[in-house]
Figure 1 (cartoon, helix red, strand yellow):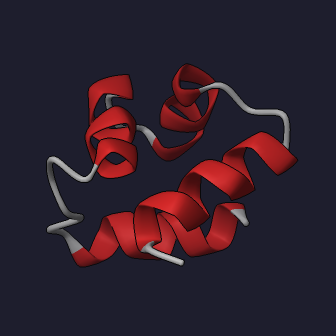
Figure 2 (cartoon, rainbow, N blue to C red):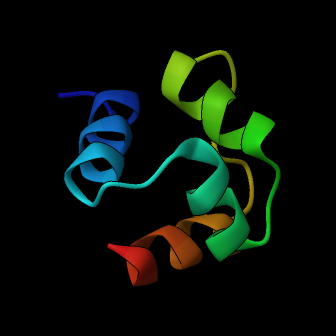
Length: 55
């Protein structure tokens, strides 16, 4: 399972929209969308830490 697939599954399992997750992480909804569509990878270590703390 790719990162994009895992992120989307975890988000759905926790009943979060892209916007809700983005607000929790203090990032844009577009970032979440790009990660899930694999058009962009996480580039900042802080984003990874925030994602781990959310799930």
